[in-house]
Figure 1 (tube, one colour):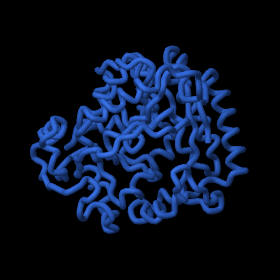
Figure 2 (cartoon, one colour):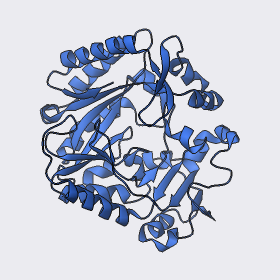
Figure 3 (cartoon, one colour):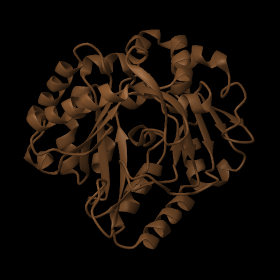
Length: 357
């Protein structure tokens, strides 16, 4: 029987990999970490027969996440301007996730299957990021991302705490930003990986613990660390040298949602100490959904869609990336955002809200 969180999360039995992967030190390291897994060579990490673009894969949603790993090289490197949670979205060292949050946008891009893909050319990615930081120079003025540092989101398409179970890519990034002046890494997580507490971030990494009311998380945040344990980890991560913020996300609107969120904020207030409170900030993100993801979810987790798919509350909205999504109706959402802002001010006084939408 699995005993540790890592064993419960991953039981890698099949590794799809590009031909060059074993020649990379990181690729060889990951392959050695799972010596009993079947290895299947594929031309590209984006072309895995029977995995991506296979509607039948919805029946194996959780199995694929737990038992399949994909290894490849990141070909195109760029740091995209962001301006919300981070100044830049860093070139990713992974894609996909072993967890199974019902609202996640990544699977609709990958085509049903969404296991972890690890990019093994992390050395090239790190060199690119170091050069990018150097070219920015000092940050000219404070903004909502950070008052001093350029912030790079290093976990846009996955969860770095889980990725750290697979490879040392995340540790390499934490080490990198720990020694870079004027910049910090940032990632959101729903998984408490206490191995990270033994690293030395030197204040160069911001961990954003994603939180939602526990009852909602049990239905929507599948395969994640329980919300109470995420809250309990905040003080430990601050003591270990990380900056810790809250990612209040996604806010799922339903009858009685305000009471649930007020109780969650009180749990945070009771669960963190003075050091954490002194540096705490939050971002608030209301649910964005998508018709294609709705159809996929009906194939493996229809109960979630009773809460996520609410045409009576939602309207079409094109995202910044050009996706045709549905979001809560603008006039109502503006009022709800303000209500949650006021709740944070009441229950977590001093917790700055970096942005809310």
